[in-house]
Length: 279
Image 1 (cartoon, rainbow, N blue to C red):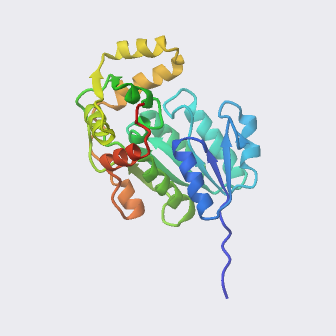
Image 2 (cartoon, rainbow, N blue to C red):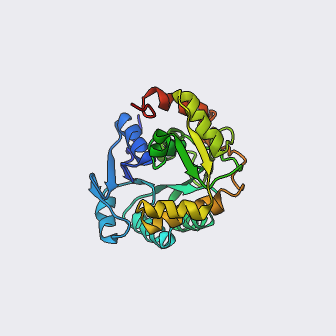
Image 3 (cartoon, rainbow, N blue to C red):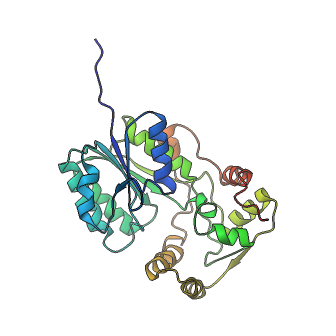
């Protein structure tokens, strides 16, 4: 006699973003029901509007949580606490949180999540490699000059496909409840080394220029970047990228039984798509 195990029905928050989109694609490929919660498209979901939370959670049994703009932002702890409590009340028993590596504020959000009583898994990710190809650093790469306030302290950039693979395992497989996975690449590179690696993969010369933090913030303001985004980026570069995250984590290996993807492999694959081709 076979035992029927109900299939998880998963709410993916930030389902059009770098990690959420990949998590949703993987769930769909397994023919598992997915609901994408986002401010634009899918099921309406807005962290700043709690009235959108309950309709998005209706009928769900699991959720992948990607908070916008960042768990270090003011109000994030309260939002995560309220959302996770509501999720449990609505019958959601498995919660997977995308967190930030080395962020004290993010750890407070993690505690708020685990205090909900749900089966939780924490994904503490380092800096995304895909920020160079799918994020705000794409335009500087295409322009051939990247100006950032990051110096000689290296970062073990993580491939977001590795994050999505771990999230999928945590959402659909046993053995991940209560785990905190430190998700990084296998080695640390400085931002200058990362840009050089991208240039080599793309067959172009791309310069990296370290700038003072104040000049960096002023440049963003001149481009009319919102103040809260400027504050977040300067916080990341002045606080989180201070050397605390230099040592690579073992989260990908522990969760998946394989090594994480190297930055050079990511750069080669991204370059092959033509994303960094000019002209």
